[in-house]
Picture 1: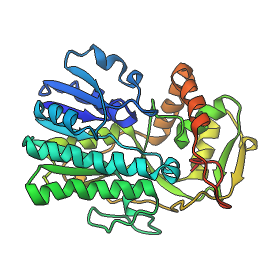
Picture 2: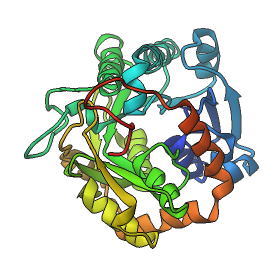
Picture 3: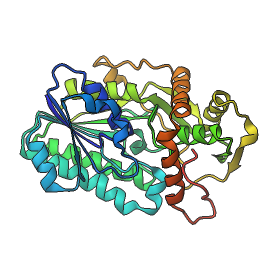
Picture 4: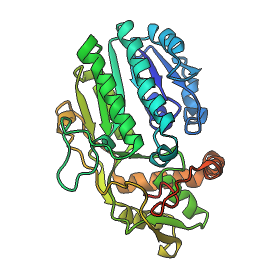
Length: 338
């Protein structure tokens, strides 16, 4: 297998790259990444020791570059995306360009060069909030924020290439990922890095919002399974982590970081903050998927990574704070605090 991985220097993509490089049947892995604020070569680290790995800096919307790369590969895993909800409030056009047009550019090249497999990586946020029950793969798409809407649109674009052209497209939708190397704008690394510095953290509303937390390595295992065994034209939910409210998550992080509730401030809820996400992952389980990472242990491991690697996240944290988008609203305050 000669594999092109878009967004492979990002959080989930880099974990997947390191995983797939160890596979005996993988001859070549090429990472295409624009190295925007969330993509960093340091995320790939020792993966560069592998003679299988090549890196190309570029944008997934660059049709000529994408075409040239896809031509030399037999499979594509498409991670590249703008992924931060709060940034989408003020830069929705960027999200639509990267997530929708970028996906179309990749899918078009995949169809034209008749690749064997194309996996498009997406999110449970496309289903929108569920007050009860869990979304199966055929559940209606009801995104509520520009980020989720751009991902829902990209899912439909990718799948249209299966229905129209027979391109071997599969879509994965995972719940909230956590683990080492995640950008410090996301809630777990944001809270951990602030608490480790003795700084306060802010919790939206009453901290009642529920998310399913899935270790990034379990997500990558699910993506690899879909790459190898998924049926073209199908969508696969990847879940099986731990359901937890943002308040309970905060309580866990305070304990792990040796902090207390005096460092927590409640603030008004952010725009369109969905109360609960939930997915049914029975379909992928039928292919043999089983998450293996214990949440409590994984959270400690993640916190320890940030404690041991301040050189990796401190500059990113400062940069993120300096460039953080502002949303003018009576109900919106600081972004991305769950």
